[in-house]
Length: 405
Image (cartoon, rainbow, N blue to C red; front, side, top):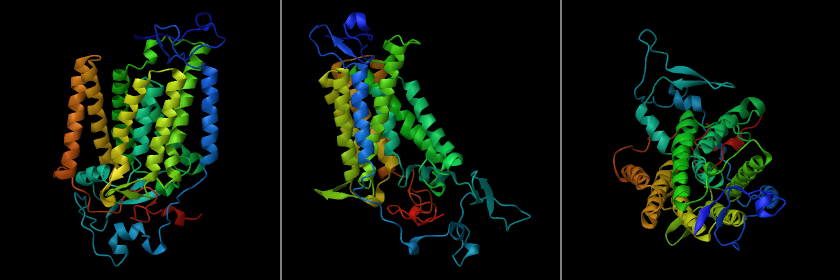
């Protein structure tokens, strides 16, 4: 019978090093013990160093947008500056005494924008769900976090902290998120609503439900104190989680979403597939270090298969929208978690019922987006896209490389 236990010190284990707080023990005295914290940190450091070494190796590099495919945003948004036909603005504002004023100022800090004098709520929702966004990375950091630090409050704080650091990098080194040109700055709805809420908070809650059903230990099960052992426990957990971020971002070495292959009538992104395989391999190492039961690892891998599949495989690249795929991913994985809880009769059934309703509603919303009239794809194609830098409406080429300073 598996029982939870707190981290034990030298006197209990008979070793010179405390065990990690994440240990699961059995009543069998011959059961496999978790690795010491020093050994866990050392092995994790070796993995991180290897990842840092291979990170610069680019298997597939994104194609640079051709100069004749670039656009001047001002002439696109304000046709009077060019020979383009007038644009039709929805929900537009106007000044009775000055009909010539067609724009308003928006302060970006390091630059100033002139925006069309309109606010279209329908267009807002369209752009929120459609387009080639950077959603999967936020989904994975949110979902995997509770497996390393099973405390939802700390995972939420990490997501908020990440968005704040992305913004602070702009005044510090002039690069958004520390490495991207400021012209590639994501929109407000993308950083706040998408990254924090739709791709962050909901997947943290989903992961916490999964950790709860799998019976993995929580920080709440242990008495953390202001001592060196508690610090070692937390440092090890966060260090292991930080290393996982390097594992997952290796999809960039394979072109991320710009390189695809075909098999049995389906297309898939090799970069995402490689990242998925490396992720489950790294998690297997985590399970060994913490001496968690193998059956919980197998269930976790099954959940990750459901989580990744909507992002990896697709039929039509033009209709591939990561925010919508995230909804399907959330629904499929959540339904599986509730099924585990029902089948194994684990935990509070009220939690299962409430969570199942949320997962069912998510699946219904996905079906309405795909086959219903709830939110149509935007007709306007000139809006935020990764690597477009606001000078192109191309989705799978890098326009930012045409900018020089």
